Figure 1: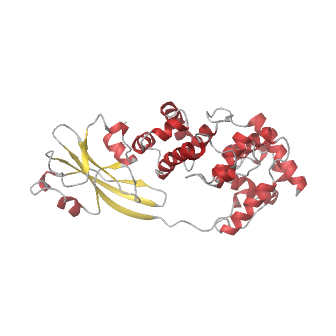
Figure 2: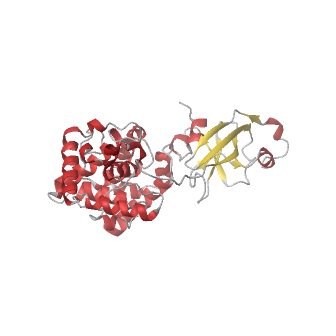
Figure 3: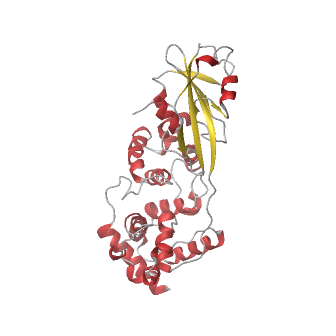
Length: 347
């Protein structure tokens, strides 16, 4: 195993320095704030999408102190459309803790980084490896694929004990010398391999620097790895959205409760049925309702079937509900769920 460790790490480092990605704005960074921000944004989100949001965040919040000083509403507003909004809430909480607990400086070890909100083991390792040269192993989805194929690790990763075993193997494969230089290149190299070469379908084994070490290639079945049998059950739900506007064109929005779907975001009022939506309106307004074409919005584990219903109301018509009228000038800065943003602010 020791020979494999040295050969594997050396090949990944050398390949990354010659062929790794260079165009991403968060690469070649030693600033923990920028690395952390990119790592959180990239969780379950495509690089192309993050490339739009990352510079806007840095422009508004150039450092962790600026982010900590902002309101959560402002952070959610800038995050709006990126999805998985718990990330934005944890991002803000984490910034506040970095300022209050660590004097505005990110801790320099993976162990301490994991004590912060929203930073798990792999994210902490990435920050520690990139910024401080710590010998810490990442294990995101792409890296699981690279390592399980290389090692021929066929245990079911939906079992927690098997994933912990792969963590242990990942740590054994880490570089052992010149860590300040090697760990950033090695960590980025694993990410790049998974994203560009060792892809889930049709991996380019001929371009892979560790192809000669790869058990899955030797077996002729790289796509059999990683093994994960437990499938998440998808559910579906139908919701009716009350799109109420007043004579001035303002729209009634309500902040969603926490926890729950779109927690903390400003949303058109949601109802489980059209009858419930009608019952929320003053007497005599039901005849003015206009049903728009419904559409499906896909969440991680659930399909939402959304049915917008428009109506023009007086400014006091919804006074008993926990919301407010917001003008068109205010909408872009609000934290809006993606489907509501598409309704109010179409491209």
